[in-house]
Length: 166
Image 1 (cartoon, rainbow, N blue to C red):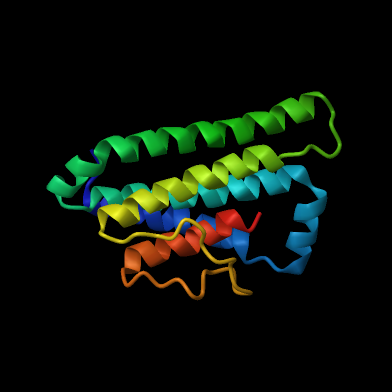
Image 2 (spheres, rainbow, N blue to C red):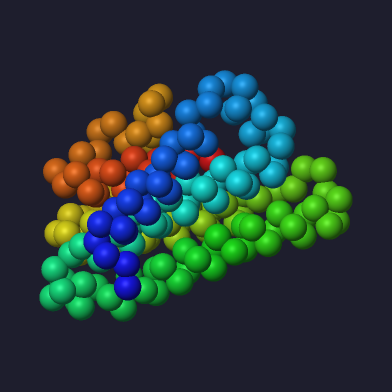
């Protein structure tokens, strides 16, 4: 089992990878629209970062709280992991079929819903009910009007907004 310190370091490293992929400017976004590989890799990175942060924050909860939410959290993590695999495998399938402009809308929607569910369970375990529909991300890509009052949940919401913008 990783120590808490190592988990924090791992989460920060994963988070920095996501930030690097997110803040590269307008030309990056134009390429994203034209290049399905870039789009898939970007959403996978954002989703993996959010899921890793959620796992870290869930593991930091008191044992009695983790015990109450463990089944729901594990189920949500399994669905999120499967959704990630579907997105990644879909890219390979489209590449093998030499599809120029694959339509990932359905698998992206499923991945976004799965990641959002993981975040909602962590928030609920911390006593915070997120609304079913979060407002659209603001121009800075964050949920500007959603402030949970909990720094970790707010961090997850920021990462979730990076997933949902695709």
